[in-house]
Length: 105
Image (cartoon, rainbow, N blue to C red; front, side, top):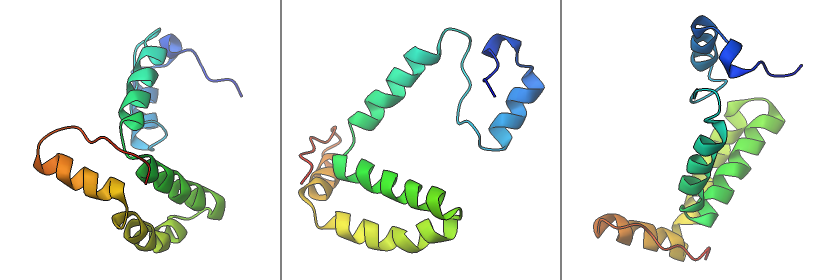
């Protein structure tokens, strides 16, 4: 089923979409690509290992159809990430109040 054009969707329907967590944000007609690029830039600035871990966990929840599988895997995922150079850099960048420069290691 094709997605309706944003200009034809009622505010009531937009509210339902947000309440059901089917979308995190709604933008006006013609603003979708610009907003998607902004979100992509924020994601790209993060630790590659952290992004990969997030995607792995999201896929696990999607594949198994329940958040319980992802929740059970979350602590081991975080523990593995804490032993990386990127984790050290993230903590250091936070303390120094600067953006992290991540290596993917």
